[in-house]
Length: 460
Ligand code: SAH
Ligand code: SF4
Ligand code: F3S
Image (spheres, rainbow, N blue to C red):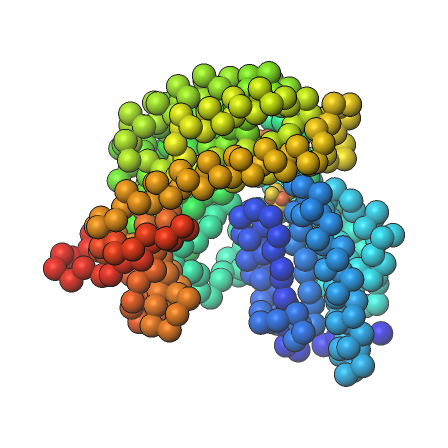
């Protein structure tokens, strides 16, 4: 038994899979563990506790976890031979969806906790230290999670220039292909006062940009300090009042929650960046209906028109699923037509993956894998060409970049343009966190290269 002195230093390695909400949750795990004496390990090899923060969205994502657990078993044996214990925990959406079942498939797991049980980590670790194994914490107590995480003691020591802040969790939309309503539970909006407090803390610690996160972030309707339900546009207005905060973003949005005041914010809120991730999934009305998306292709195109009228330079990105059950070649052609019409700045496309417990997984007209693969490659070619065309428009352009981290090469930093393009430029690491005016001198497939303009002073 590893009788552990609760104050002795230990190291934790958290590996995040899936969406940005998992990245955010991983940071909160660090916050919860810090008062217990845990610091971040650089590699799993040096960690006393390894947490896999998992994703259940597609089969491939979920399966990755089991192969990783196999590797960790060997790592644990190596460390044990050197006289060191290693605890292995599984968190995130696979933990929520599979719970106890995971223990049967991977008995090496010490404990499992779902996305809404992060605040129970100290308790789970204390029980683990006392010799307990195979614990599962997977309640849907989302209010408890955020209330517990609002604790002042859980302040991060430093935060990156571009930080994430979860404002909304869960989903009530029940698209017929999707596990999120089952893994993250019902929609919940954090109160505005909590979000504003967390945002101010992030800015105090160095954030210049905040991306508000939620599975349906634009469905956020949190309680305002005035006791009324606020809209996301109102929240963004309030956040824009924080002085040192220069940039705001939000993701992911659902087309049906794209209200007029939020569209107007792209024109009226000077800190809201011109980038919107607005998944459409498919371009065929028949498929959209079977997906339970509750809008047509024409509705989506009209919406894009309204958004572009408010903010003509906006970069639109999207998610697409090919090979949804029953999708014909004709349906797929409608997706290609919609993409051609929208002209995306970026696109994420996936083969449909049947997920246990979702309605679409039961359909008997599943599309063969080869057909899915063939459609996916056609869609990806089109999206790649659009991304290239979007980026090429910026050759020679001048704009502000938030310098976020060291670049690929010595003496280089990487940052983001207002349109979320990755930008590489020559600058010293002491400039991380600055917003500089740059001129683009090269355009690659996924990134721009630029140099700092010295004549003009950058506006925040
Ligand atoms: N809440 C967001 C996205 C959630 S998941 C939204 O409503 O758009 C991120 C993306 O994964 C989805 O947009 C979808 O394109 C993809 N996805 C979800 N379930 C999938 C499945 N079963 N197979 C393939 N892709 C899927
Ligand atoms: Fe999944 Fe649909 Fe909810 Fe997005 S809106 S999380 S795709 S169920
Ligand atoms: Fe994956 Fe869960 Fe996010 S299933 S995409 S980690 S909400």
